[in-house]
Length: 471
Image (tube, rainbow, N blue to C red; front, side, top):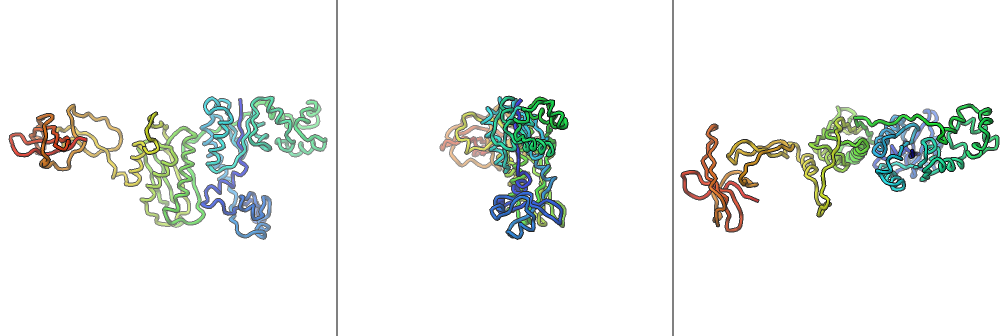
């Protein structure tokens, strides 16, 4: 087995930055009691002002006054870890959150699907960067070793137990997860690296230190297995995003909306599913939530498509009060089946699948503005079709040609007829509802080369009456 460790050193800070419209502005994350606030993390802009992790807030305010402060939120960090585990689940069925700010993935069984490790690693890094998270990635033969090696390495790939042992041998003792008192005692004995500790007789080490030290070393070397709780993706997506200020316009809501739909897309890709219905909750300070329901006729999970549909629905809603928080909830998460595509499409960048075009039109124009057609059991052309749903319906078409364009009202044919291609076809129907007809239909061709469908009432003369045109 091969285990990849993804260490997220700035998870709490980047979780805040990815929700801000200006992530380049100076920002610090605070922790500690109210009487002594400490800078837990700082972004690069704040670091450029001279602010450092571990400084007191009063000291930081004396150095620079133009920076934003946000309290560390452990619940938000836990939610971020769950989200990233859902993202990682698409790459491995064994994903563990055993350590804080860390994803452990068993990737040995995934290499046949995602390619050799350098290619697989590059994909992980690309997607994490797109999501807005800095990271360090290490590959090792067991999960504990991968986690400890990530403390001092980035990009290391130890593909077997021997390479893992050699990489661990160079690790300083204070970075391998030993209890602080044990690491201090070993340092006082003149030992600095894991290799020097492993060179000691095992029984001597057991007499001097507790059993937990030897147990940790055995797990580090893969000599003893560790039972890791594996992540199971939930059947519900529910994410809230608190805004920095009250928002009163649709335009200002597009940035958080894009972030939420991108997170939903990553969540769906991780569980290999899609969404057919989700709800946007716009939370106000003095009014009830404004709910925007986004319903789809087909299952979807593409981030750009979800954003476009949600945007179209949102723009049709009047915002009664300033918005404090945006929340996205998706309960209906059916299986996702990708649309079939053409292998040799002429210009794929200029085409759009019918399903996506249909959803965009519904989002922009409304559900009632886009309708489908359904056939009815009636021989009269003006009664043979009716507006219906957009869902695919199997219809039985007559065995004779029918025009694709029926006129709203039949009219006298003014264009000279060059020849009659077929007919007459007699239609007698409608006696039961008082709108009975008796007509002889002809397939005609005009002098301009157009093909039409025209009729003449049975027993009557005069010009032909045009009913519709063929494409």
